[in-house]
Length: 352
Ligand SMILES: NC(=O)C1=CN([C@@H]2O[C@H](COP(=O)(O)OP(=O)(O)OC[C@H]3O[C@@H](n4cnc5c(N)ncnc54)[C@H](O)[C@@H]3O)[C@@H](O)[C@H]2O)C=CC1
Ligand SMILES: O=C(CO)COP(=O)(O)O
Ligand SMILES: [Zn+2]
Image (cartoon, rainbow, N blue to C red; front, side):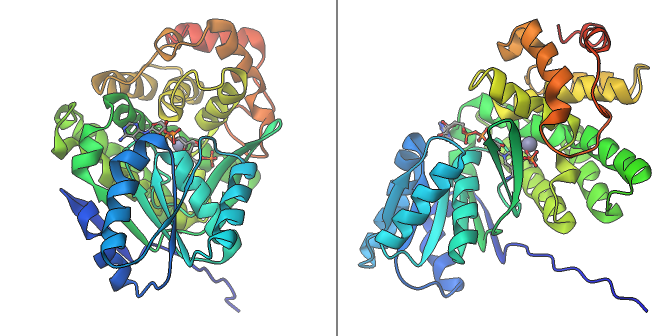
């Protein structure tokens, strides 16, 4: 008897394009959301997007509550939950980079409330995913969370964001290549649940982005459009899999460990990109995939070396040799890479 079942949760409205921020209240109407929203944001995104959206609500006689967060932490999630209770919010709107959106989606899940995702940077593929990513002590959690009811991605704002935020988003997508290699490996060796559709979508998203790399240039709104669509597609792959596996393998473990060893040194996307060069080399040392990944990153101005990340060689080696301990996720790093081998891969790929 066939007893398998799945429940894929995706956004109902995805609104992308020039000036769409002005349509936020229309999206709220379309979703039949009532009551007072709580905006979860950080300082710059507040000025760029949260305040203008608040003005739209005020014109309708609704005064949105606002909470500003800086870090992705369970404490921040707790603060949002308490604020939502205190301010009698009916739904949440995450406005900003990956951290603000992650916190809003995790708090919404806890509160059993709807949530809207308003990215102000095309810097990460958590824009539509149903996962939150949070460090805690020595580990990093990929938490099941509320997927957005709607995404409002204004390409005018995204194109004006600092260029490195966009190149970080591109690198987060390019890292799908190695994430999927790790996922297949874990499926074959450890019988980890695997979705061919989700893996194909994650890989195809990276391929389309790389094929369009020449059109991804600073200040061009069309570039923001291309990158944002890729970020959404990658997020959908995670939602289909109900796991971050299609977009997060050993290169992400490496980045999460760097976040612990060198906090705020570099952007998430840039770290996973550099990690991806090295883990692709571990999958196959011959020039081919790893050199393609390095060249694709370089072509969109993303870092390909430790120097460009602003992180020293010793820290890179420490992260590489210890990151398998961060979470129970089987990857090409297996039960760990020894220091000599780590130095070899980092040197041969030109990372250090
Ligand atoms: N849940 C998921 O599936 C995923 C989650 N993530 C998480 O997302 C986070 C990384 O996201 P990022 O956006 O790189 O970091 P971030 O959220 O820290 O944003 C970086 C900085 O850019 C600022 N910013 C945002 N928009 C701006 C704009 N238009 N102009 C100027 N500054 C702006 C933010 O306020 C922040 O100071 C990590 O915590 C990562 O783990 C990343 C990928 C997937
Ligand atoms: O960053 C992610 C995908 O790009 C997901 O992150 P996790 O490694 O926390 O699952
Ligand atoms: Zn990522």
